[in-house]
Length: 163
Length: 194
Image (cartoon, rainbow over all chains, first blue to last red):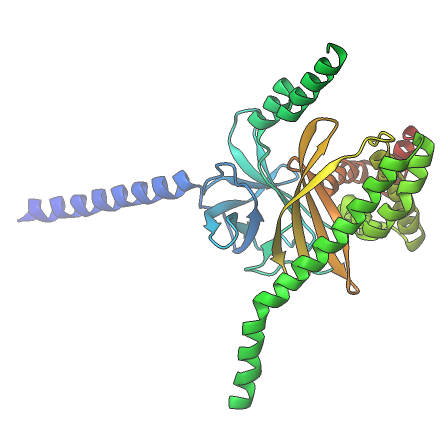
């Protein structure tokens, strides 16, 4: 009887430990733990470029929050990104949000750049002055191959010069 | 209760039409400005005439007060009224010279208006495809309504915002050397575009 009580206590302790590890794994995995009081705001992008929940939100290179959710607005097919920011951070209403990449092929993150307005975003507000993820492949493609029209123009010029 | 309900219902029913009217007004104003700018580029005989003639229509549609404030960012609040005026004048000259320098007399760009979005009331984003000298560029014009007039407050070319691009530079200057550093950087940039 004595042994079974001890075994039960150990069992409960182990279960609690496993639960704590599982909770921390999930929370740290999605990056949703940030200390202190927080609030949510949204940002509207034309292209979220594969940004995912848990991505960092940086201001002046300092992590000030996390991406909580990314969804599509069905009315105009834009990407709405929910950001969880530290309460101490007050953002003027003309602040901008940009989706950037760490290095050339690194993780995506949201960079905030505060504006100069006297009014500040309140919880639940939406940042509409945004820069979407730059499509590097398409830019490289345009530089490398030019546009179809350019090729057409060149062909026309060649035809005129060599009738 | 009924007396409050009816106007609310009528307003809700009219809301999509009001938004559509705002879309149309912003796009009509932008189209008129683009036509004027393209017409000047087409008829200009030389670069000097082109640059001089383009300034007036561009200054009419672009809101340089808002653009300068946003381009400078949080440091703007530290500027005195006189410094703010000087910054707006310098930024206006910089943008007009940079923009007009891209035009070649006689060569006209074609602009296709693709779509209009309303991210929030009083603000429109007009997506266009500009074809100039054989290259296509995705250009989004961000327009805002100020005192009933639609004006451009930012231009996003191939995903890069003009205001964000300048803000990243001016904010760095401000953090290093304050207001004087920003004004010096603006003066230097303007001198380089002469």
